[in-house]
Amino acid sequence: MTSSCLPPPRKAPCAPNAGTPPEGRHPATVASLLFVVAALLALVACGETPAPHDPAPQAIAGSADLSDAARQGKTVFDTNCAQCHGPEATGTNLGPTFIDRIYHPGHHGDAAFHLAVTRGVRQHHWNFGNMLPVPGVTETQVGQIICYVRHLQLTNNIFKPTEYQPAC
Image (cartoon, rainbow, N blue to C red):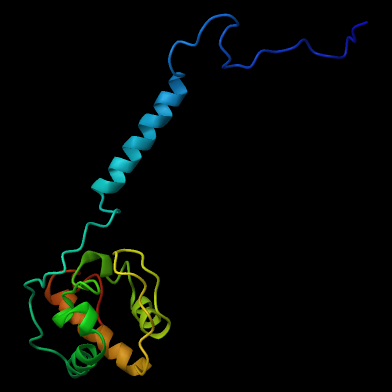
């Protein structure tokens, strides 16, 4: 006895006909695969995948015309940061350069530098490993380091004065 309340059995919408072999991939699967490949290529073209870092020091515009805070920041940077981040923040084989668009104030704001120095930071742009906190550097000194780094970035066209104005 059949119940009139039950609908007739339905075949899955994408199921091939019984008894016939499938003829290649479903068009939606191919389109999805092409979309994913195009998206990955777009990310690479836009620079979202970090390029390998060249630890060789860069030729940069130097530390001329530093404000008092930036000059103090250079001293603190040279003592606590240059071992890994290089002279004038050009990078080494132990740490990245800060003279790079990745450290643009719109991408890594001043707070990111404060947190990196005081709490450390997990590796996320370069393959140098995690950065440990830097003991003994005060909040005032971190501000001076940021002032120095932002001066170097501005001098080397990492940002324009209309995009960001250092607070020092």
